[in-house]
Image (cartoon, rainbow over all chains, first blue to last red; front, side, top):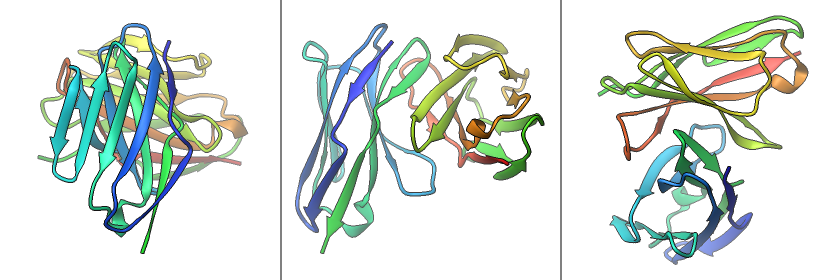
Length: 108
Length: 112
């Protein structure tokens, strides 16, 4: 199975940077997903890291260290619309194992 | 390209009834998986199908079942509904190994 840990809540100011950390203990680990979920909506795919290193996609970047069982999602130039829950999920054995999610609140 | 489509969007059932939820994956995607989301338990894996074969199953009772058709569309069935089955049921499809999983909008099931 997989154990995924991430902080429960984070608050940041519009325009700032926030880093959401995720640690995992897994079996059959293939890679690490990040999803964004607004209240009442389905999760939206943000990134998928298979290899170690940083993947940059616009204002969002994701990092993975397989040896340390660690990942982070970096949100830059925060906007009000980035207020949402961010879900870290390990992928292996054809399934996603999710963390409880980090609620990010962006304040003006 | 159309996204993952789930029907219906909302369902209200009473205890003891059964329910069938439907999922149409993104065109060309052959892997379909199902997840249950509740405020207390978060997102939990139910099962995954590829080419009509179940490749993995989560820790849910036998009342939860699923299947996949030759056109990759999938259904999940919950029998003898309990109040605790009230949840958002999400379907995700993927194009293959190391490909992202994309979620549908979900079916919100309320059991009264």
